[in-house]
Length: 365
Image (cartoon, rainbow, N blue to C red):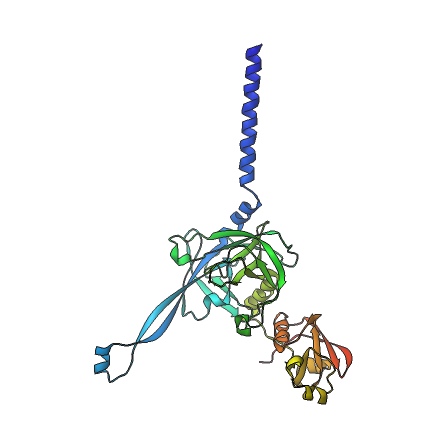
């Protein structure tokens, strides 16, 4: 009897230990691990080379060269990340990863396989570029693009890329995990020299470092929700403030580049200046009766804005519901739009509020 009881207890303990081991194994393969396994095989390391011509001073050389500077060329290497996002072998990355490069030296998958690629096109304002793998793309891993409009503050996200990749001796990507810290983040107009659409960004505390640029920001379902693009830092290293371009906008830009070879430029067709920075005497002369907005000072008669009824002297206060106070605000909102999108201007015309509706058109070439 006692032997039977001891045997039963032993069997129960063994079963309990086995169940505990299974629970631990299951807990290790959580959603984050599975998401990384889905996307990481499609992440690539992009190495570029820029040839710089530099002058060098050599007293002996100068003695016989009559003071003419000696020039030499130096190869400067750069590194970034990207990822394959469709079965045709298209690769997304940041424009600034390729900017200034004379050649793409290599594009490498995590297993070390080098891909032969060509540049499809790029959009400097959106800071996005599309490459394409040449030849047979069957069996090439690719990431699934998700949606960024429904991201929740606090949900898990994963940054995958190649930080400091030139210091590593293997091509496998690194991962860092964090949360969505903020959505639709609008950074200062001066960031990017005012020439980049660094607006409506995803903010995350997942570590993003040099070399991460162009890599995917992934949700817990293994879908790409953004492209890791930049950080705010006093030291140049990670300080918890990383930013990604939302994938909803990325998809539209990429589609334009693939279809047309470039991003078709939208335009409103007018120039303005900030009411707050305009001489009060001028404002009085043209009848401006609002303290903020963008005063229209020039407009082309062939432009969609003019044809819709916008006129010199109008003060644009919102574009598609977004308040504007500076001409750059108008430019940024223009760059977010695509050909055929509706546009609604709220305008103050000598004290009276008006609504002007039009449709985005392409800049005439």
